[in-house]
Image 1 (cartoon, rainbow, N blue to C red):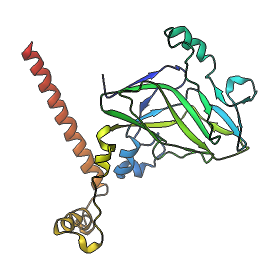
Image 2 (cartoon, one colour):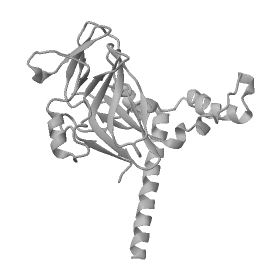
Image 3 (tube, rainbow, N blue to C red):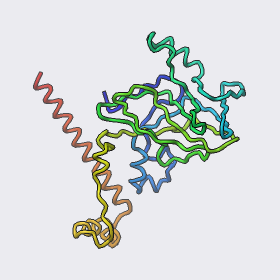
Length: 265
């Protein structure tokens, strides 16, 4: 098993794919070439797409929805199954799970919160969770905000859904299936444990910087800005070299482990 396995149990739409450092092709060429922090964030994780496009109109309290196969009809939205999916689910599942197909859309008791299922279930390696968030550095709809959540998918094998806060009222809000809806990122449980997050300090005031701090600042900022022959994107070049060295080290370790297994046999 790899770090994460995606189970796309609603087969319609684009399957999960690796997030792109170009932010799905939307970043300008200069940013892709020189802005390593932006491209690294853009490529961190995987894209999840909606299985179909649909539209929602919310009046501040209640909502209606439609989709391309609805023949122009709008339906009241409380809890809605993906079209024809519940029948397929019941035919494929065990007797104990029959009748428990996850809803596709649910307007929660908070009214302004719409819960959307991506049609995907995920499983991660032990001690790894998934952060569900809006795709990094992609433009977002002004009609809703996406809430972020961390799911402990090493122990919870259920639908990957997200909550969106509806903002635009009395206008159709379109949810597209041809562009990433979620960006899912792996997070080790230790990184968001209380003991880790409480282990921090704040250095206050410029006079509090140590000689070591000033030396690091000089190497990072001063030397690069006073060198007349410096190249653009030095940070990006250094980061890419570091990644290449890391890949090489991991490949050597994998070869060594494979050789050890052969020796044992």
